[in-house]
Image (cartoon, rainbow, N blue to C red; front, side, top):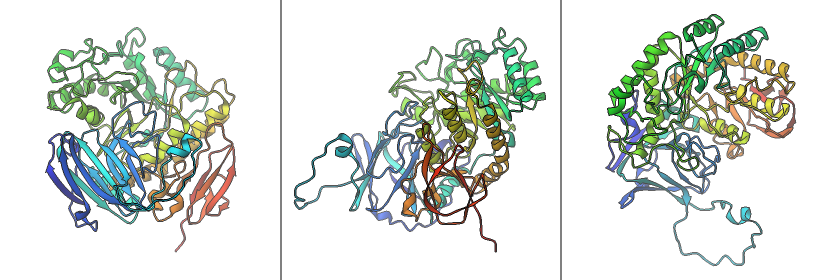
Length: 571
């Protein structure tokens, strides 16, 4: 890896808050002379060439797109990425290409990335062209037949540190970026078990009944999550048990622990006047409220300590070992909540920078609260240098194809993602969604708005139990994959192009993924009964039948999720 500095970078950047940063400089093959830099009134611009057959991936959790060649992306933290614009729960200013390198831009700004645009040149008349008869045809991204230009525009900044990583495959490059970030996260075995998030309005008795229901009916559920109703106030948050719904939370926690459950609590960081530490933390908060709650500036050690100490004493020491950290992204573009980009924070950040760093800093505060207790928890926003945090991203959106694409894309950027299951309109939809989440880093059934288990009226109890058992059986290979993630930076879930970077057939495959090294999962979309599958060169067997399967493209029709296992040659 190699660091290059242009101009005078800002002081508030992701590396300044990365506690386990691991930079070891070495020479790179990339011709650094190809990179051009200039400042302008809007900030600064980095420019370099992109080869005609070069493919571009990454930039964080992109739910709407995969191969970004020819696209413009604006990396804004946004809870509602409804179009292919770059908006994301986890925008990461890091990309990789099929030409053996990746680049990380150390900034907390809403950068704009132009991924292969043509500069003007004196061209010959190409002659008469075909008339486009629909907008898809007119506006489609043209295939690149010549070297183009990549532009990275960084607002406000007058300089930037760029880190270049190289490797034979995209997996090699991403692994180095993850090790630079501090390596993969340390996850307890129980974190891979099924997490069931209970109906938000359940009281203590209903949670106890739910726990008994799972044990008495042989459902392999290991974690129970409590949604907003556990608190007296939730928008903004009080972080106090509601004693009407939960008259004796310590007894409930003890009971759930005795039944071999772990307990996860929902919250967000916008702090209500009802919170016991409200006045103490107020001096270390931003200047604007959200839902009449103050916004802790977790970039200050004071806010982080006040928040962490309370969570440790009031929740963690009483048996809570997981948290769902909601609303730490932004919804300025759809639902119009969160703080302004121009807001000021005690640490010196503005609102734009804090939006980009909020999720990372929030996770740091909760990890301080957890202390030596390991977790695999959830967060609504992450960003650059996030690989060492044991938190999985999720979304309020619910498109199945986007959820699968998120699973595929997450491995490019040092983040984890769950295509969580909520409810479904049919048995087929429920099982297709559950199949996908079983083969992901965290298996979540998020029934926060479902008074009954969401499969109750769909006549699929046996299938659900079987899939939960499948998840239990996958835990050993998940443990191994996360051990490799921690020690080498290799993502546990990856796109096919990540390992098979020389295979051009993989360049557009955004609906299959490598799961724990030797498995390829190819989910069938909701509403469909069959699909085309591609297996790269190698020896493969069907995961379910153990029958050999030829590599290449083929059609498959099955009620199960198509899964294939690579058989290594014996030496």
